[in-house]
Image (cartoon, rainbow, N blue to C red; front, side, top):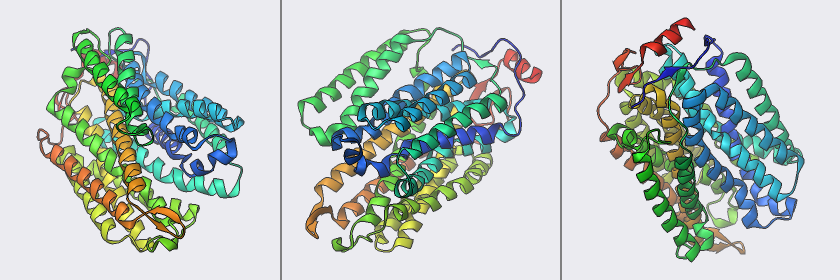
Length: 496
């Protein structure tokens, strides 16, 4: 296992604004992931594209985010996290400008692809926090940074809905470009470069193998409902991704400086945390996907509330605010009892939230209450997951390990999207002259999401027990688990 070494040159001391700036960057990136959701039904008439092509505005961000998040995490570990963070924010800004200046579907998909690649900002920010901050500030700071993924998603929907109803739709992309540029300037001014580096050569074959595996798998998952789950294209992609994954895994185990250290990833503390992340990602995304659609269903269905686009988006806003409020609570739970306990609590809260949603789907305020309970559990979970990961991996691999954990959440979201689409498309009836999902379709989704949360609970219970750390040099660190900080890194931090 290669040890961490400091980067050449002096490091800058972190300021009290480092964490707020990184959290703001994470929130902007997360908003980009959901920004186009209210726009999708209108894309064909606005661009002349087919509905299938319009769907790629969401699919492409999932693919590029899945591929680039672990890759850029590894690059950040090797060549500088701040440097890669700035590059990611620059790519996000460029993608936003492309979407702002064009109505051509090809240009829009390209811009969205660039926006998706910036998802690596969140694990990079978490790793900078671990490297730079004193031990007593690490847990609450990474809790806030990790929660931005959910907070941004909750905020993005109502903001995009308001823009859609009151301004030209290009406005939201100009605004995102301005926010991306502001992020770049803030990082340049405030965020220091981490002195921690992971030595070795960049694993280009491993990167290509991981790309083939992820693209094949996620394309099959996200497009299977449209292509047909038994179609040659879907089955071919699934089979090809399995073969590519096996070959990639064999190569990674034999190379000296792998893109993903599979031996570390196979440790129970890392493997089970990533399994829990996938299941939590699934459970979280169901809340975001169906809440707006449920309240927008027309009253002719017998259960729909006929709410406007803006009202449906605002239903998720209390959940976003709850996530902001609960991220420090999660950090205190992790500090007092360990992040494993925090994740157990989170999974239980999410399951309870979906049970509440199952029985309260006729009232707007009770729907909002149930969605907020689920979001509250998500906040605690997203805060605990990086703490579990960083307590189980070497300090020189934190960005790559958090990138992989973020990837698992994205895979969970992709699986959730496929399941939700299949249920809503097949459990239907005719109401008011149109085919619509039945109420039972939504209730079934809530039960499936609750099952995912309970499965995450089971995976968490099998995690090795943890306890609050003391921030030692070697032994149990501030995040639990065994970490090693070499004297050279310690010297670099002290000199900063």
